[in-house]
Image (cartoon, rainbow, N blue to C red; front, side):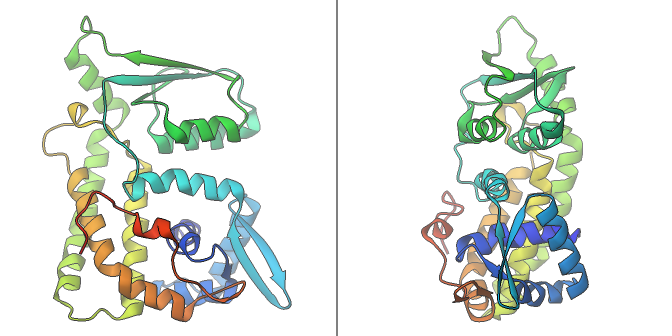
Length: 290
């Protein structure tokens, strides 16, 4: 695991729901069981500050960290997919986006944000994504001041076109073979953990927190290379649906015990981290609550 990516997961999954700010000492404490030592935590946090993901506040001898506006916006866009809170219904519409004048200094971040949302190159200089523009794209265009620097078209698949060729394009451009393999590896890793959790009469809070963090971290890594494609464009037996169901049900089983660990052991700018906000209970809304 890359420690910087793991820290982003922890801030997005935990800190964003519990007061938004975390003491550096608590971050070191939380990551120690995952094999990340204090020196690596400090180096990783410094890198994330330099890259614009985190910002620091010093109070006395203590340093506290939180997402920057950019870091929070990036994670929130991802969170709508991770926790299945966005509408994924499809009515046959596509978004076609052609970048025209994105500043060179913004190009990598701009493309990374579009990639997270599911845009892929279907021809040189042309990106596409099934579905409506949605909130995430509007936020990205505003963040990069890019509304007049791209061409954006709302398109539909013509009946004159070849459905077979469209499926082939989707399969190749969205690299579905590699994504399916990543989902299957994820399921192989977490099915045993799900069985273990279901056998516990009472989950130990630290263990629940560790499993929850690893669960979301690994699921987020798979989603980074996936697109929320409509079922009509996916091959039969697509493993992404099972991966989402496992993640949601296991997350709900871990929620109560992991929250005890968070509020009892981690500190923010005003002392122990507070109880989770309302958005925490809204995660995975379409899965049956445990």
